[in-house]
Image 1 (cartoon, rainbow, N blue to C red):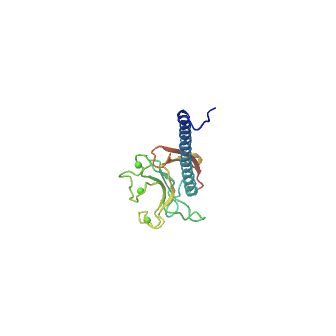
Image 2 (cartoon, protein in one colour; image 1 turned 120 degrees about the vertical axis):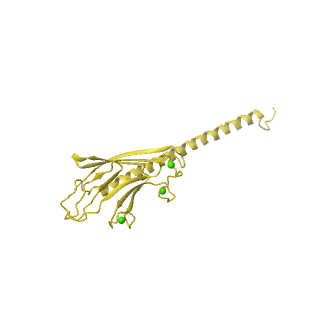
Image 3 (cartoon, rainbow, N blue to C red; image 1 turned 90 degrees about the vertical axis):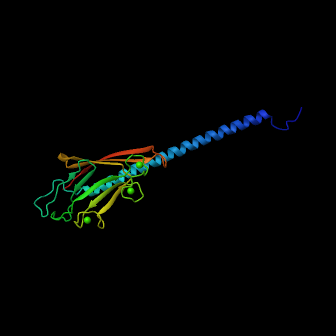
Length: 205
Ligand SMILES: [Ca+2]
Ligand SMILES: [Ca+2]
Ligand SMILES: [Ca+2]
C-alpha cells in the first residue's frame, strides 16, 4: 500500500472553502453583535437623557405658583405656557412666609438640529459654540435688567433632548411633561434610536 505523503488538490480546496466560510460567519456574528451593542448604548443614552430632564424640570416646577397672587407687591404671575407648548414661565417662593418670590423663570428647549439628522449642519449652530445643542435651559433674570446674561441667569438643566412639550391639566393642578430624546444608532448615523417619556408633575402652590 502506498503511503499518503500529502493532501490532494481537492482536499486543499475543500479545507480552504470551509475555513473561509467559518471566517465569514464569525465576521457576520461579530458585526451583528457590535450593531446590537451600539443600539443598546444609544437606547441607554436616550432613556438617561429623558430621565435626567424629567427629574430636573420636576424639581424646578413642583414649587411653582399655578395661579399667582396679585395681592403681593410685586405681584406674582401664574404659571404660563408658551403658545408653542415647548416653554413654560413661572415663579417660585423664596421664603416660607409666601411673601417673597423669585423673578419670572422660564424653562425652554433649545434644539439647533433643524433637519433632525443629529449632525451639526451649516446654519444650525445659532449660538456659535461649535456644538449641536439639544438642551433644556432655565432662564431667570435675577438682576432685572431684561437679559439672561448675568451670572447664573442661564442654567443648563439637561442635554440630548429633541422635543419638550408642556400640557396644563388645571383641574388636577398638574403639568404633564412630554419628552423625546434621539441618539444615533451608531456614531455618525442619521438612523436614530428614540425614547419618549411622559411625566405628570403636581404643582404645590
Ligand atoms: Ca442637523
Ligand atoms: Ca450651538
Ligand atoms: Ca439679567
